[in-house]
Length: 164
Image 1: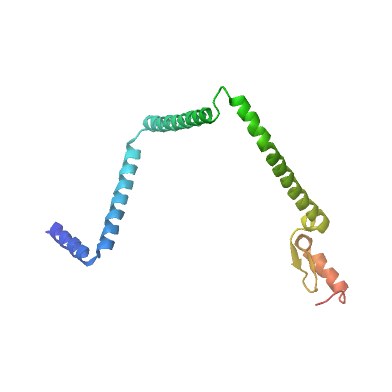
Image 2: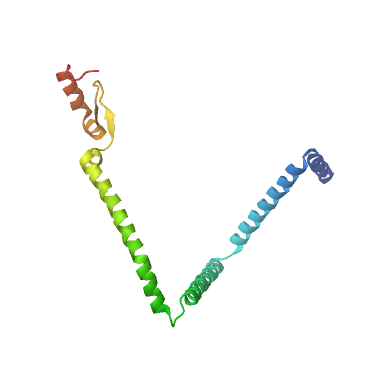
């Protein structure tokens, strides 16, 4: 009796749902049952079986890496055949060297310009800036945060000094 009422409720629920919603519901239930099956499988596995499983997967990964390395070497042999490899590599070294040198010089110049700009402009040493409380100027944040009491006592001692 109870199972019949449950089936009737499920049928009514499915009839009310649109086709898209029903498909999403089925997908959701399938993914939940898959996760439950995976959890049950992992719970049933003992520690030794788990270690064997991990080692098998690691061996498979290493085989993939070995096959990838072999395919890269095969491609390299095809592009640069062993009998003419030295001449071809020398040729590509002569062709590519000016571009590599230019790239290194350009990167070095950019790096040096950034360093010089920081030193000359003073941006690198000061740190974050903030508006000074009670004054119309900017000051380093770390100076204020290190000792706010002395800042405010100095502000009271010199009340006409750049007040807002």
